[in-house]
Image 1 (spheres, helix red, strand yellow):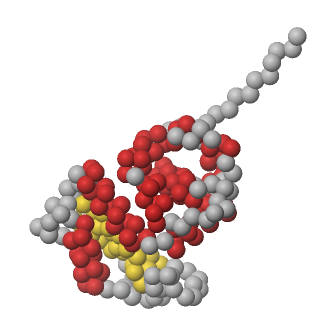
Image 2 (cartoon, rainbow, N blue to C red; image 1 turned 90 degrees about the horizontal axis):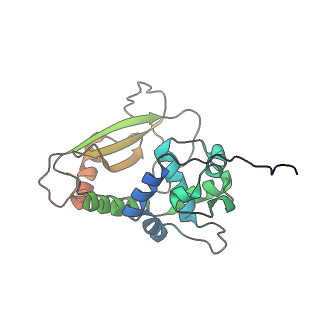
Length: 213
């Protein structure tokens, strides 16, 4: 009698249980569901797709076309989804999920998320450090985003005044350098105006205005 054939399958676990536990504690699934539009013909909830993208960004960041293979190698039990292997994830599904996130009110989503995390983990907002940098672009990118951001020439911190750029602003709290605010601006936006806007937003997040900026 021939011995039974056995197949060895290797699944990834790694840091996924920890990342998933933090996402659950932060209420990310419910938060995304409130802001990202659902379609009646969704075979996989868009929130599940976005969470997988977030998990991937947190642990290493594969390119979009490699995400299906990455998902196929995950042990679904690591993220509380025993049926993960039965779901079909391809780069089109991830791209459509990102399109729907782009059309959402991301500013309000991020503000609610940051307020939740500040309260949940008791983050120290006594000091907030802000910095901005320019992100240069090659080629032609006509038009502007839904929020009005457009590639423009400005003060290039890459020392490439010949290229158009965007301005990326990031604020970190004093407690472990946790990001609490970020925004992308058109490339000709000056720092004095971004500071005013950032300060006003931080005053909504912080429980007091008595903090060092």
